[in-house]
Image (cartoon, rainbow, N blue to C red; front, side, top):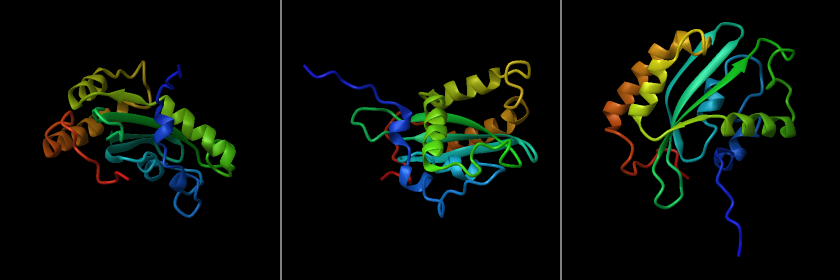
Length: 164
């Protein structure tokens, strides 16, 4: 009998894109562009940053797993950034460090089954509990509601534009 390995979000990282310096810059500063391309079979539906020269980027991604009979998920990923290599883990990261950073982001992402659950979660965010997410939650909610209206929900096998 063979043990079945559980699937982790890191299994769906687009390593070719994320480890190619010409496609994914490893500089300090905002990472919205990089995070939006993190997963295969996905596309970004919302994003925002809290901060200026340092802060936190948050992206909301619609992920359509390539696994039969598996419904799409909505993923929220947040990543801190800084203005120099001393306070930004991406700057000057080698491939090994980059893999560790991306695996941690992927496996600690928040996953939701539908827009409704995603919206409820963001509406419940308080400043005391999630200081960096709180100031941008309204902008994210606006973008997510727009995407929901355009897509009409997700639990009916919508295929992503980036599906490979």
